[in-house]
Amino acid sequence: GTLATEEGSPHELYFEVHHRLSFDNSTQDYSTARQQRGLVGLVLHGGPGAGSFPKHTQFFSPDLYEYVVLLDQRGCGRSTPLGEVTFNRLELLVNDVEMLRQHLVKEGLIDKWIVEEENEQLIQSTQPRNH
Image 1 (cartoon, rainbow, N blue to C red):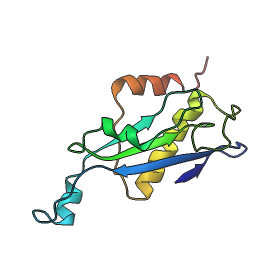
Image 2 (image 1 turned 60 degrees about the vertical axis):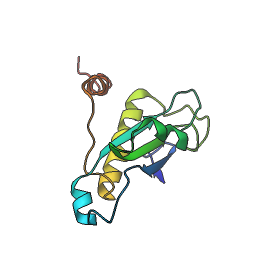
Image 3 (image 1 turned 135 degrees about the vertical axis):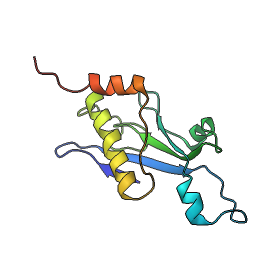
Image 4 (image 1 turned 30 degrees about the vertical axis):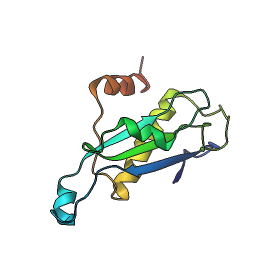
C-alpha cells in the first residue's frame, strides 16, 4: 500500500504487509486463531536509496510472527519520489513509522506493536527538546 506523508511534503511511502503465521483450520477456528495473534515485525532497510524486498521476511520466524511489515523509507525503493532528500530527517522517519502503525491498527491488521527499550530511547532522542 501507500501512505501520504505530512502536508507540504512530496513524499508518498510504500509498504507491504506479509502474513507469516500458518493457520491449521482442522484444529482451530478462526476466532480462536485471532485471539492467539503472533508478533508484528517491521523492516527498516539499509541505505542510502535501498528498498525492502519480500526476502527480508525470512529473518522472522513464521512460528512467532503473524505479520512482517516492509517499509520503503522516504526517497527509497518504491516510495516516491525516488532519490528525493528534502523532508527526509530522522524525526520524520519516526513519525512515518508511527503513522504506519496507526494505519495498520485502523485497518485491523495489528492490535499493537512493541518498541524495544533501545529503540524507545532512539525515538525519544528525536523529539524536539525545549532548552
